[in-house]
Length: 300
Image (cartoon, rainbow, N blue to C red):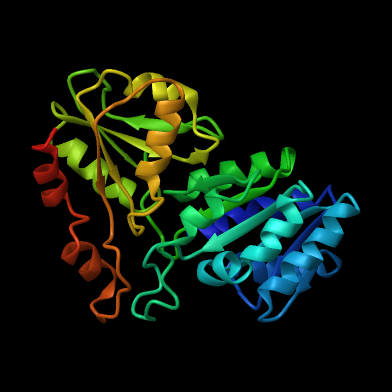
């Protein structure tokens, strides 16, 4: 099941009892959404291709005490509507959940207008935002339940495609460790699709690495800072451009606690991507691979 369908299925279940939930879409569909909008037409608003307006509508609903979920393609709900996100849920401190589908190069080969390689840094900079990135559908379901129960200004980053389930449990709003974390190993910290690459490397070389699926990167979990304190090093793997990627989140959180692990970033380059070589082609070309992660680990 796609992550978006798992997330929406939980909203559908909650609507059975809670009619204060509103789901807004900017002309963006999903199999689970087809059922929701038929069954709960008074709680679904089709905003059209108008992401900025969707955020403004959501702001008004939230001011009336409603639980609001906004749903759209990642490049447009993030960068196109950034000012409205700042002025609505940001400045007004409103518990609006933004569901962003297709992060990274999920929409290859649609070109750089549809690639989402800078929005993590942009949304993380909005005061009061809570940033979540999902690596599998069970996590999407758990996160939806948590945000329904405790609404907050949340930016939820979902992958466009179905990704395998990671068979390690995690508490909501936190992170999960894959492999045994010991001080003599290197931590591979990532989120979303790239977690699966890190997990694959851990399965191959458990004596050298453990992986961290950083589900919520803002606020950054202090417990993870404690784990990273004194280890052999950190490789931050992110399907983003280098400025403000996940490595910056790790450094900022650690430095605030006077913890300074050695950190190496493995990211996309500081350039717009025009080649029509598919998502996997870009990841391979720019070194977001097991082979390059292993090579970079030699620097630690």
